[in-house]
Length: 91
Image (cartoon, rainbow, N blue to C red; front, side, top):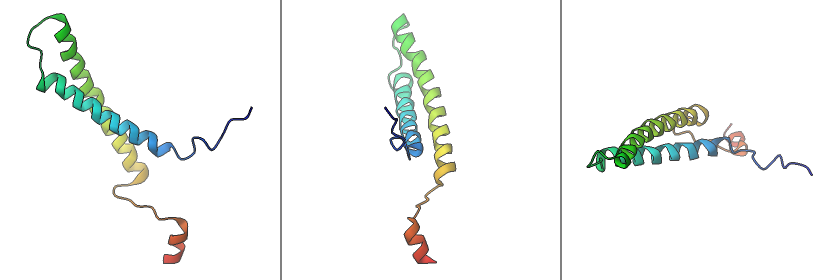
């Protein structure tokens, strides 16, 4: 049985887009658990959500910025890449 080599070709950008979106989701959940709905009592369960909200903010922000930097480095900011045929026609 041979592995399909074309299966994951061109997925280098899409994994960073998914990581970028997941970082934003983590950031929003972290803000919800710490800023919008802070724990009202000091019991153990609310302390876990408060602490995990802080870790979600930290993890989401770092994942968001790392994926943004990688997308910016590989794709460029506001870069639209033309197909090769249209590049030849412009020259």
